[in-house]
Image (cartoon, rainbow, N blue to C red):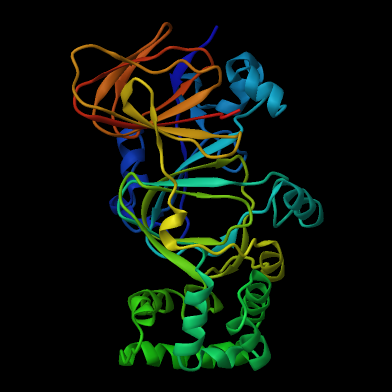
Length: 410
């Protein structure tokens, strides 16, 4: 029989997370989990909602049984699409998260399926699974990120206008890039910068740091990265990832705005809180702004080197026909889509659309309760429902409810 029940997320305490109750992750877990105690000195970086082995969701009503184990015993609740398309009898094809970012995450990209399989086979300790990891972030608060390569003309301007920047690589590589209009020269330049030895790049970073402290700009583009460079250098002094600020777009998202990151696109989250959904993988190729393992050559090799303006990286939702309460973030992947649902106080219950795939519903704001055929209960920030395939759920808000629902997009 199809079922709906509450589940409990896994929490990740990475050092880049916001401390204590400042973290939306901590706030949601405290509200949604009765026995959760917030440590004000602890960073709360990520909330994982899914069946990935590195952070499995639990079912409190079944003595904290793993959701993955329950689905192994009840595979029909996944829905035919998940079982047929992904050949997954034991888990969800997506991983749903909340992130609270206090300082920059690593300069990174996620491999495509073929590369992920190869990396996992060769380095299973560094790349823990063989899946690709397209992902989408939806801002909960003001959110900052680096996302994709800047237009070539902007990168060229940095290398022409910022003193000392050209010192990091040989003049031929810089000249070819400045005089070119293609991504082949961009790949050569970026690779040369990111593989430069510390003996060369660290003195250059200090010289660029002094340049920004003096504020003697003759170009508005250079001035625009002043605060960002100083903040990033303070967080990661002497790190080669600081050079990526001159290559990658800086993007600010307002609450409700989103970005979609396909395979092999460079990015780094910088600050803020967001909802994130991705294919069920934990594969990350890193190259800077991190104490973790770096695989610089792989990163430089797999990137697309597609260039576009910062605003072009925003991913827009579509409307749900006939439903003014829902916005659909529908990326071009089969593993996941996300609905943003905002319910004001209404006189009649609101019925979630019935899906032929399992889904999870996360409440981030407001209160109310839910009803379905086999269960009912209260809703508050941090409440997470697992909704089996084919289930219909009615929601009654007591105060404005803001929720996100992730599901398979096959």
